[in-house]
Image (cartoon, rainbow, N blue to C red; front, side, top):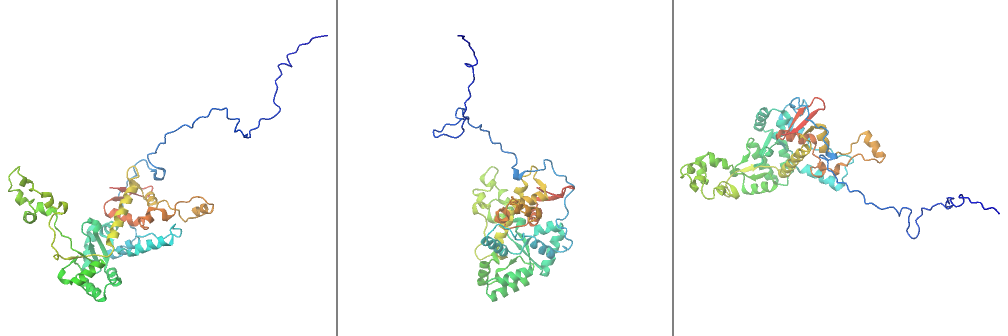
Length: 393
């Protein structure tokens, strides 16, 4: 009987004949349950200096080869009348086919456009023709000839000086719901006073004035008294306030009267003080219906264009980039975007979702640019390589 010892049998490695199952059992055990779970690393979100949609691709200042002499390259603009027609035609953007607005909103936009008066600011004309002196002379000549009529809204600066063609003014009066006799008398009065910005009260009856003011064709004349008259004209200032040079010069040094006396701020116009015309005294000022909404729309559009320029580092941008920002990056109707749209890809936002259409009813970029240039808010210059540049002042 022999005894043989072998280590192969005792040290044999046994493998499981059954493959491990990765199916989740009823008890909820998992082959990965033995691993230690870790929380995801919290990384601080960093905000870039410029947002991607507002990214400024020009880190340096644009090349300035000189200011643009005239905004328009149309050689047919030879007088004020043609320029007024040209500016009115450039004010609105045509309603796009894919507007992204329902029929109610489209009707609202079109009705708002039709309700505004067909006026043009004087500053826009000066920017378009680039000759302020010649523009003022021609405005006086055309006003004297009865071709145009000047409308001035007090307290608005250059924003409140506008022009309207006489034929447009006659059409507004004819389309109003005034009585035919009142229309005839008011039209005759305007034709007899071609250069007048104000109409004396004695030339308009109280009833006609009430009807015309209710329709927006007349307003009460603003008082021309200002605080400048108080400090610069002793004779005039001494009538309404103690802050005139005539009274201050006679007061003892260091006394209360030397600084205008008690209540000098109120007397100089603060908190509703100052000289005001009494009831029934003063002339009427010529006005137009819906002039207030027009000026409000213009003021807000100017501010919005300046805010778009402020997104650039040096508050200047190429005209093409600024136009794209004003339009809001809308989808165009070219062939490339049409192909992307057929494939179901994103081609840009619809016009109805942009501020240009939601707040400004489709004001064109050319029109608001001319308004800002005429108001002295921006300037247009040649870059030489990428077209024209626009800089905020």
